[in-house]
Length: 239
Image 1 (cartoon, rainbow, N blue to C red):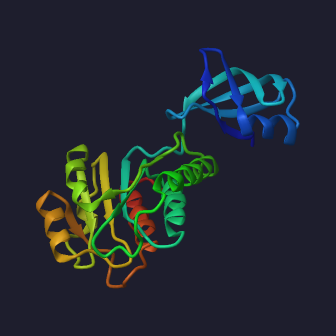
Image 2 (tube, helix red, strand yellow):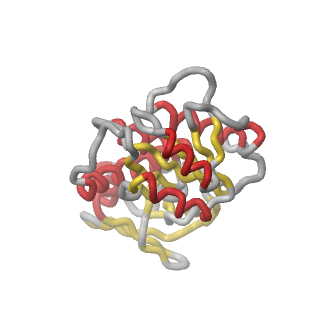
């Protein structure tokens, strides 16, 4: 299978790859004129492309074929994840991207163990993890990882979605009956300490639908993976 890269320089007939990926293709993989690779434009399209020129940090291509990225889900899912302690958010970002999330939005809530610290710097790392996961999974775009919000700011985002699912330890409606035919879905999962009753009430009052993930208690890094896998399965995206 040809190697696959996200590229940023496209015309109707040509493209170019720069930076570390160009170095990898040109120096490590020893690409030469005529070699074919798959280029992704970050907007959901893949291109079969033939190498035309190789420089130390730039590889140029002639575009041969354009097609929609097969791995990109038809449902747009945003994950709002309670901010966990240590490096668990790295795991959540990586697995969310692999499973098809379009965006990851961490948030701080009352019972979060972690506290905000150097979030701008950490966000750069999360963005790199998302980019690498997108490449590995064959995604058609690189999902955004936003800077953390406060939980009180979440309801202002709800009108962006057809359905907001609140995965709550108190349980709720059957997930199976909710996902069908929804195109823009938000998932909310908690941090180690879960949600206070007041936080849960405000999210539900703002339109979030409480649902459960079965009778077992899942860790805060497991719940987003389970929730995304369940939603993607019910939406027909893991078939």
